[in-house]
Every structure is written in structure tokens, then in C-alpha cells.
Image (tube, rainbow, N blue to C red; front, side):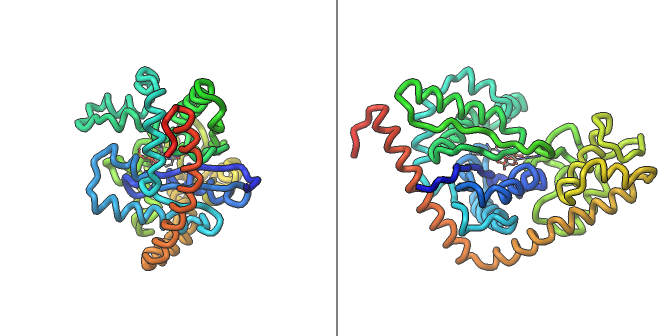
Amino acid sequence: MSEKKVIFSGVKPTGEPTLGNYLGAIKNWVALQDEYECYYCIVDLHAITVPQEPKDLRRRSLEVLAQYIASGIEPEKNTLFFQSHVSAHAELAWVLDCISYMGQLGRMTQYKEKSQKGEENLNAGLFTYPVLMAADILLYQADLVPVGDDQKQHLELARDLAIRFNNRYSETFKVPDIYVSKFGSRIMGLQNPLSKMSKSGDDENDYILLIEDNDTTVRKIKRAVTDSIGLVKYSDEQPGIKNLITIYSKLSGESIEEIESKYEGQGYGKFKTDLSEVVVEGLKPVREKFADLMKNKDYLEKIYTEGAKQAEYVANKTLRKVYKKVGFIPR
Ligand code: ATP
Ligand code: LTN
């Protein structure tokens, strides 16, 4: 058994990953890969809680895998796989469904937002979505789950379910901790800096995609909402500029103070031009590597096949324990 602590995280292939996914999640994973035993999953079962065109889902799932690797997540060091390839996820989710309370699930913000929007396809999967996420995490006995700020509530639920199951049956699951970076764990929209940058938004100027033309990125930054104050200052009164400074800092490694003083007395024009360069340069290696990887589907297939094998071994071990504890007759 490896001595390393375990990490589990995932992105759902519902749309093209954004700069928000990258800065809030994927980029942090890269830094963790040496110290931890990491499982990075493409959570395709979660993706179908909203309607998907099958061929697009297939293409995007592979693209997300390529984006993980292009971002610096090394397949030799981590387990990379598709959630649907390891059936234990759906199986454990069922067992956890049976100890989940409707009331608690109904209070999940993500569900409430979708249901209040009058979503036509308000399916049961959307409601139990966080239970499947708990199953993802608990199957691997994860110590840490690196996610963006928006996932805190789901992580709380995963912890609750682990504790509830352990109390009811006996110690089975590790109770996972959340890992949210102190800064930049919620990248906001470029057009609406009061809500998070989302890949399922309608306005394409609101988000920067991890993979898109450099010219498109530059154009979106040029159009990003600022304000009439005219100062490059990290302040709650200037949510647009605050968000752009966050992006600048996360990608350049310069501190907020350094950025503020660099642009003191200058307008937004110069700041935005430089930010475009920082973003384009920062994403350049990812974009280049991605293009190469997508030309080599055999390589990708090897990685996810091997990944599923490794993941399945660990996941089934936990599932067997769970089945035994709840009273199913062993096979
Ligand atoms: P959608 O926007 O379609 O609801 P999503 O991007 O939130 O999807 P995932 O793809 O599953 O959903 O998210 C993957 C990871 O990216 C999660 O850890 C999530 O917290 C993080 N993340 C998503 N959006 C942002 C954001 N704007 N800022 C920081 N982190 C984010
Ligand atoms: N619910 C998450 C995606 C997700 C996830 C996970 C993240 C599904 N399973 C397990 C971390 C660990 C989201 O909507 N961003």
C-alpha cells in the first residue's frame, strides 16, 4: 500500500472547460500530483443530468482527458479515467441514496438554482447528483478533494454521508476534506462579474475557454466589463477589475500589490492589453500540447483504459466492503 494521501477530483464534460475550471481546479491538481496519490476523473455520468448530444459528449469527454494531460497532469503519476468505465460509482451511489435525506438534497444550491430556473428537464438525476459525487470521492477513500469554491456544499454532503454510513454500520469510509485554494477559487464571468464563469452559460463573451483561438481570447478580454472608476484596484466595489486582476495574478504569479502598483495612474486599456498577453502566454503550452494529443487517439485510449483498470481495483475493494456491511450476500 502506498503511504501517500489520496486525492480525488473531476470535471464534467458538459461543455468546453473554461479558464474558471483551469484556475479553480485543474491547475491546482498539477501542483498536487507529486505529493499525493491522485485520481482525476472525467465525470460523464454527471454530465447527463442535463441533456447531451451523444456524439458531442463522446468528443468532449476525450477532449477533457486531453486537457488534463495538456495542463500538466502526468498520466504516469496519476490515475485518469472516465467515471462510466467504473461501475462501482453508480452502485455505491445507490447505496448512499438510501441513506440520503430528501430535505438535505433539496437544500443544495446547485439543485435549487436549476429547479428555480424552471428547468424543463428537472430530472431525478439532478436531485441526486451530489450523492453520486459523494460516491466518487468515498470509493477511493480520498483524504482531499481539490475543487472550486462552488463545490463546498457538495463536499459537506459527502462528509455527512461518510459519517452517517460509518455510524450506522461501522468505520468504512475516510471522511474527506475539501481543498480550495485561498485565492482565485471562484473566477467570475467577464460580462457578469457577479456570477461564476460557467461553461454552460449562453453568452460566449462571458467565458474564456481553455482551448480556443488566441484572437478570440484577446477579443473577449477587450470586451470584458469594467467600470467607470478607472483605477486598477482589487476592490469589491469593482468586481470586474477585481476578477481580471485575479486572473492576471493566478497566471503570471505576480501578487495583487505588484499588479496594482504596476498599473497605478494608467487606464484599463493598457492593463487589458497586458492581461491578454498574460493569458495567451499562460495558456500557450496547454493549447499546443492539447492539439498534439488530439492527434494521438491511440495514446489517449491507452491512458483511459489503464486508468479505469487501476481505479476499478480500488473502487471495487471499497464497494465489496460496503455491500458486506449492508447485508448483501457475497458473490
Ligand atoms: P457548469 O459551469 O456547466 O455548471 P462547472 O464548470 O461548474 O459546470 P465542472 O466541470 O464539474 O462544473 O467543474 C470542474 C471544477 O471546476 C470544479 O472543481 C469546480 O468547482 C471548478 N470550477 C467551475 N467553475 C469555476 C469558476 N468559475 N471558478 C473556479 N472554479 C470553478
Ligand atoms: N460536482 C462537480 C463535479 C464532480 C466532482 C466529483 C468534483 C463530480 N464528482 C468528485 C470533485 C470530486 C461540479 O459540478 N463541478
